[in-house]
Amino acid sequence: MPGTHTAKADLFRVLGHPVRVRILDLLRDGRVQVRPLIDRVFPLDEAAAREIQAGIDSFFKGLSSPGVKVDDRVAALYQLYGILVLLRCGDLLQRLK
Image (cartoon, rainbow, N blue to C red; front, side):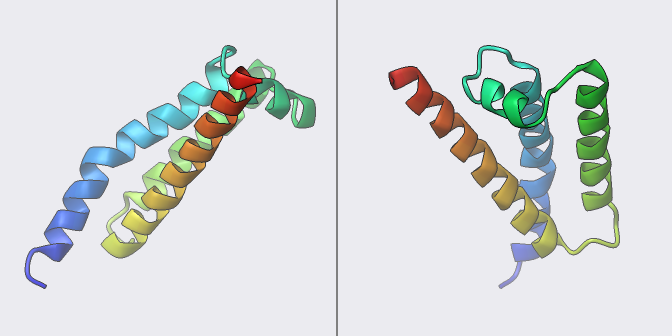
């Protein structure tokens, strides 16, 4: 379908950064109810948070490289967005208890 490639590239360009920012916000936000769960499994001190942020930044940099197909970029973005939705739903359920 004509224009599909461009539309997917635009989707990744517009939504990639906000998804990355939201993932990092979850790691930093002590109010998010999922965070204590993460801390029990993997204590998140300042060094660990920086390491995770560097890994996420590296992942998005690699995902944005010219050699990655647009379809793969969009698929990864959808999966990351799905993870964000699950974490936010988990947070909501914890708050409703």
